[in-house]
Amino acid sequence: MRRRIFLVGLLFVLVVAGLSAYVTLSVATELRASRLALTGAVENPARITEAREHLERALARLDSTPAEIVKWVPVVGQNLRAVEAVARAAAPVVDNGIELRKQVDALEGGALISDGRVNLNAIEALTQPLDDQATSLVDLRDELRVQRSGWLLPPLWDELDEALQEVTSLADSTRAAADLAGMSGTMLGAEGDRTYLVVLLNNAELRGAGGIPSGIGTLRVRDGNLELGRFSYFDELSGGPPYQRVQAPADFTRRFAQYKADTDLWVNTTFSPDVPDVALVTSRLYEMNTGVAADGVIFADPRGVAALTPPDATLTVPGTDESVGRDALPEYVYWRAYERFAGDNELRRDVLLGLGEQAFRATIEDGLGGADAFGDLGAAAAGEHLRFVSFDSQEASTLAAAGTLGDFAEPQGDTVFVTVDNFGGDKLDYWVDRTIEHNCDIEPDQATCETIVTLENNVRDGLPAYIAGLPYHFKRVEYGLLRSFVEIYKPASANILTVRLDGEDERWFKDGEEGNDAIGIEMRVPQGERSRLRVVYELPLGDGGYRLTATPQPLARDARLKIDLEPPSGWVLQGDAEDLASGFDHVDTFEGNVEMTARRDPRGGLSGLWARLKRFWNEPVF
Image (cartoon, rainbow, N blue to C red; front, side, top):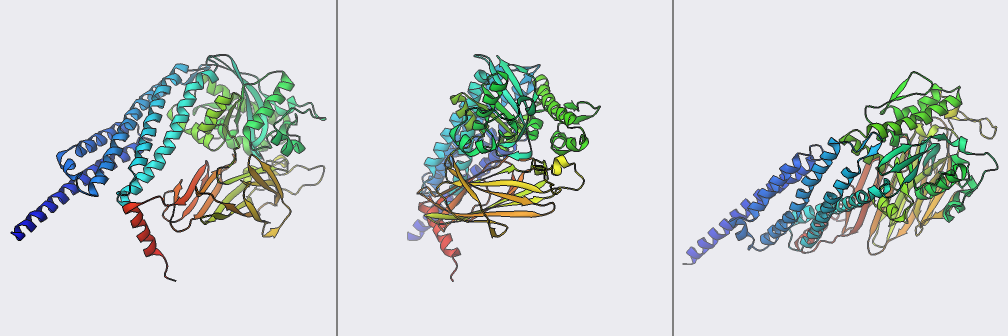
């Protein structure tokens, strides 16, 4: 009798195990295929439909009789119900993604900008699908949070936790896009004419906000109709010394008035890294000189201008029979024009100004140029090569959320933000290779960190003096000598321990702005040499753990970013990296924001027990 009971029990266990394996594997296979299809949809939008089909099959498996039986099995059931809840919450995300894709395809099939007019109806048609998608992503995010329980097996916890980080980021960016689409009509003159300044920057000569202004024009908008005004070289708007001042924000005046940044010495107006402040000062200077008031400012450096230019556009070089294509435009502006027109400063200025104006006119007349153009614009905005500032407070908040404002906000944790101001009056910044390193040893109450900036001057021989070094205050200048004032920004709560230049203690300057402390020092780097600035500090941590935001300065050539974070045992890292098991070692081109957090491991139950066992097993004995 007992033998029969044992055999029946064994048979039951085997059947349940078989059903569990069948349901789990089949559901996992379909969900994995759905996720892969969604990943591939970036390159091939048709794969969104394929992802929906896999998701439907997974849900059908979860509704099947075998699955209903397995849901009553301890542990396995809780994990399967969690998967089902998340899969059901993911279905509206995929459905809304399909609808949003249709609207984007329609937008690309027509023209967003054509013959000097923005298609406001097409943008308006995007608003509701974006809003629906943002709502469904928030619902999925909330479901992922709810389902992370102590019953989850470690692999499933890790999958849900990773999905939670991705979905949270997508929900935020989609909401920002929906809000931006919703107020685009107003910003494009649907409720009254708008005038925006267009400021062309040249970051071959760096300033805090990117580069020196080289040209300024206007863009007038009326109910979607775009009219580009005349562009002026910045010297045309300056009356010369004594320079006239305008009212500027308090921090701007305190920090940068010494460089006449609040005057019509236009070349210095971009000293501040806070782009909205720079926009306000620029607009007041322009109104003082021309009588034209602005509703906002568009900043574009050569890489930003290239991203705006239609892919097949050909720009004519003024005063010549030469032409420049979109891809060659940045390099031409950064140095080839200076070499080509070395003996004729007036023609060179006309060339640089004319190319920028032509690029904007080509965009207004011919449009952006299809699907790839949106990706190029996004990359240019992420790298700070395109910034758009509105003086309307609600619009400014929306633009900030969308990442196009370039605002300099109070830090929410640790920061990596390095700015360079060119003190040599040359165009050497194009020829500099830059590396920014950030290393942190994180403890529960405090992080000890260092930020290291390395400048390597690789300017080649034979360049004109306008690039490689003009006489400075009538003194002889060494060919190719880089003179950079470098500022490393840190939270005001940080305790600075060491500031060393090439291993030596040097005089440095400390100044505050928006809850940040700027650690500044001049770096002089001869041709073919490198210099290294190192700042070491302690940062107190609160209950939320450690958070890092790294933001690039828009450069002619992107810096190299290296980050090494070492958290204490029992903490987890999350953010922009693939392998976050015990530490974060990031080496990449610095072409957009990088965000990381380190905090106590929130896992409990089975996943928490497994994590603690792994840590115990991997702890060194001695």
